[in-house]
Amino acid sequence: MADQHFKVGIIGASGYAGQVLHALVMQHPCMEAVVPDARTPSDLEVRGREQLAACDVVALALPGEPARLWTDALFGLGVNKILDLSDARRRDPDAHYGLPELFGGPPEGARVVANPGCYPTATLLGLRPLLQRELINPTPIAVLGTSGASGAGKGLADHLHFCNLAGNSFPYKVGEHRHVPEIEHHLGGGAAISFVTQLLPIIRGMIVTSFVVPRASPAQLRDALVQHYAAHPWVSVLEQPDQGLGLGHVVGTHQALLAVGPVERSGLVPVFASIDNLMRGAASQALCNLNLWLGLAPGLGLPAPRVGLPAGVAPAFSTLTSSASSASTNG
Image 1 (tube, one colour):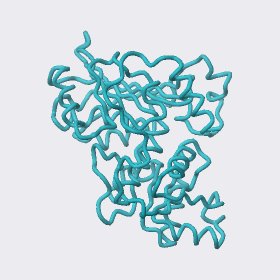
Image 2 (image 1 turned 180 degrees about the vertical axis):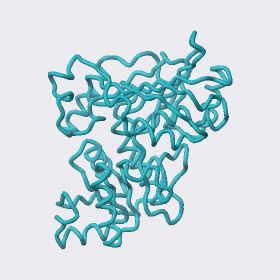
Image 3 (image 1 turned 90 degrees about the horizontal axis):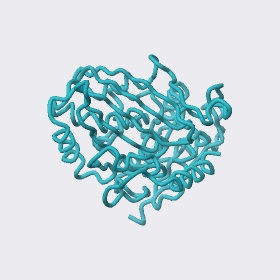
């Protein structure tokens, strides 16, 4: 494996997810990062076009519309592998949806891999195996997602100003969140969700709580998740929700933590998922997809998976250390 060497182009390396992906590729034993000096395809000079044309794969860490423009331009340069971190192609039947634990690696001949969004990643990991086994009703499903501010990107907005967000938390994009169609599409089975998101006054990390109508006991739901992810070390299913879902256990890692709660008085059961939105929800998932696409071990270059389950709430110093590290990465 040491003699394998791949050039990975990264467009959008200045964004939050792009910065983390760039750092992961820079540390990868078999990859070399290529970052052209161009914001749009029309900005590319001859050298930039030559650099990208020589890449084995190009990753787009961009919003949807710029990603579409770059995809067309890259195909024109002869690039035949594009990893798109935007939402432009996530429901495109011609693109592979890159959530390996649920959809496998890219098939032979794939030209585009659509890297899932952070909220869809967390929601799908917790719910899709249960829906496939008909252990929960496809509707109604109520999803509450809480995320650090980096999930909103680097764009300037009043609600992201320090004075508005520090020590504060509030819902955003209620009734219009762009991830809803993506989640429902990949849940399948006629699933319909109500989806509300809240910003937390932290940099990164997210917890998604999905309230579902069960067709089996919480223990059976948990057992189904354990069975599904038995061969996937970067997904851990906790014994109890309060065992270790704290964000301090996932920030800076590729790990996803899942848990199933007891039946509520309403008859609903909560299914929990905790991830780092910039890692598992974006950059480390992109690296895993790159590994699979290039014929490498899926975990090469990723933080090691957890051995055993975390216990208790993550200590404050763990969260502070992770936040300080992410601040230096995202600054």
